Image 1 (cartoon, rainbow, N blue to C red):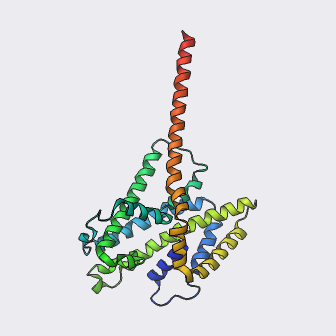
Image 2: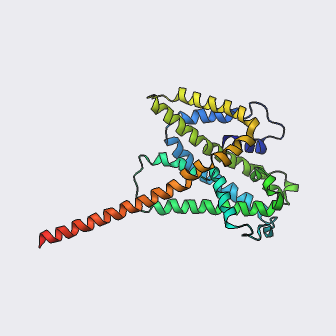
Image 3: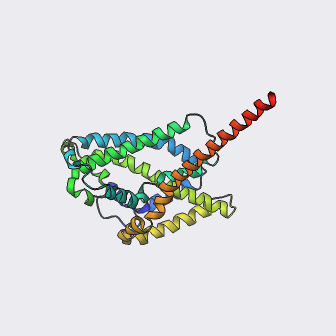
Amino acid sequence: FLLDLEKFSHAAFSDTEPTFFSFLPFFILCGFISTKGLKAVGRSADLCPVLFFLPFVGLAVLSFGSADFSNLLPILEKPLFSHVKTVFHTSPFWTSGLLFLPLFEGYSHKSGDGKKLFFAYAVGACLVLLFLAIFYGLYGPIAEKEHYALSKIGLFFPALATLGRTDLLLVYLITVVLFFFTALPVQLSVDLFAKGLSLKQKTLPSAAVNLGLFVAVLFLNRHYNAVYGFLTKTLSPVFFFFGTVAPLLFLFLALLEEKGRGQVRGERKKKGEGYAR
């Protein structure tokens, strides 16, 4: 995510070749956020949906009219196995929802929360499908070679030739949301690091983690294709298991546990009625 965020931010903000330390401001901001508690996550979560939804819809509206959706046909041209294989190898990029699991540690479940979570994920899934439909409708057969297209799709709006790159304002807002999104796993790592060392102050753990990530980005940026291949080929079974198989397994076990509790309550109720007689 760090490498993708770096390249996306460079595509959005840089008109020229970025310098060696162009991505340093992110780690300064991330280091500051990582010293704060989990309340900072809640505050950013209140702000980010608005910052994301409005520019996303704006970019979709700007580019929707220029998309040729016949590029999506035929939808099921490839066999089912090819689709399953694609899901398997791209699982490292679709399992970020697991980052929220540590936040449920002190969470008190309320009635209707499950429906709200399902609705939120359903809306997110529809937005992803909408973007992919517009993306492939715009670029067609060369879509696979177009990287970080979210910063470019607004260019297809004819009026921008007169108004200039006003769509970049929308791209900048989305980039801010990506900053907070990418900072979340770093913040959770710093929190875990501080708890493991029994440290109350998170300044030193935050500095160590962010400095290490900064050096890693500087090094791995030159080997992006190798890192991408390592994630999508070598580590894809790991991401697929923890991101897809394990949650379904836990859901199945939870249903079995709930069924078992229902049977126990039923047996106790029958015994109670028997004693009453």
